Length: 244
Image 1 (spheres, rainbow, N blue to C red):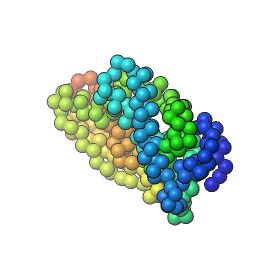
Image 2 (tube, one colour; image 1 turned 180 degrees about the vertical axis):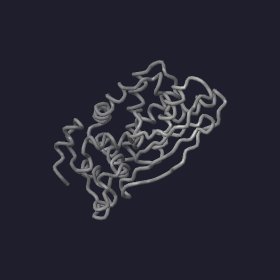
Image 3 (cartoon, one colour; image 1 turned 90 degrees about the horizontal axis):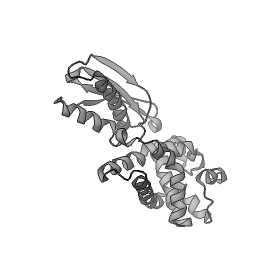
Image 4 (cartoon, rainbow, N blue to C red; image 1 turned 60 degrees about the vertical axis):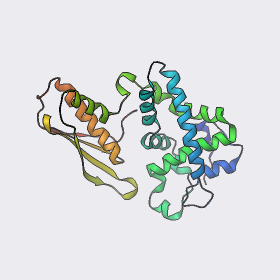
């Protein structure tokens, strides 16, 4: 395992128990003493801390809106982005097969490892240490939230817009996948037949691609401003994630 000082500096914590840190960075393909149990613990800590941050930051939002915001912040895509910014893959211990297949850059492995680090920080220094670490990584994302726009994801907002105007629901179709198995890109089409709108979204998994396509479609329907004015169009929406 590479020297972890740069990672600890980014996280704002130096582990007293180096074995805990090593375990958090060990994928199950490497050995039995892996990070799966720490991931379970870190997931709980992460949800608690992010939930508290949202509760304090948005005192007027109801429970449902807070839950949706938290779900967008702690999903795999968001965790993968943070882990990638930390260059977390460089520090992971992977089995030979996983290493050769690109596991160090796989979104699910990076997201799980980040949660494992939260769990390891909790065991090493207590809740305050883990909380400070999570706040350090999520503050910018939470400060960027516009609750009047981003309380719901793009698919939900598009569905509600269409239903309020008595249109049928959009149809999402997986039209293509590209890239190697460990780093695939999914291409999804969003078709709103009643308005003759077709958009294309892409992302690191199907769920993300659907959200990107829905966001593009939502921009079109909101831009029309009236029912029945849609023109047949195909818009290729680049980018892999939607900000929470």
